[in-house]
Length: 194
Image (cartoon, rainbow, N blue to C red; front, side, top):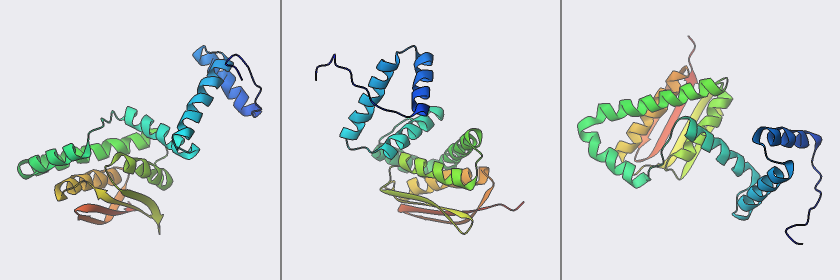
């Protein structure tokens, strides 16, 4: 097939209408837009991503842009926290707490901030942490958030725990349990009954 050949591909009426709408908004032809979107999707599939991962990457990117997150190498961040923690523990915890409150405000602004949305956002936040494994789940009406391999030092875990605590408290949850050990953070939050 040459580059000038065209092929018809069947798509649903709904997708065709969305394509037409976006084409009008962007000023691109439907042909160019469909080509770019399919090309991008195929590139990502060839790199080993699946469709769900592509959606998650787009959602994570949107969150990062919205809250103005800046990527920082984990080892650098850990060293900075460890160095400053001894002299400014309170300040560091308050800065991380403020970040937790900002993320809670973001969730309130972009959703109903129900338990399901909290769990969903926590899963994306887990991807932002330098962690080996994160899990957010609902358990008997509470939300459990656990992170394994987050940070290298106890100081880093402590400040991250502050962020998670303030995140939940800003959403009206009470912390029922928080366990902090080097490389491990476990938080169980229950809805406040006020």
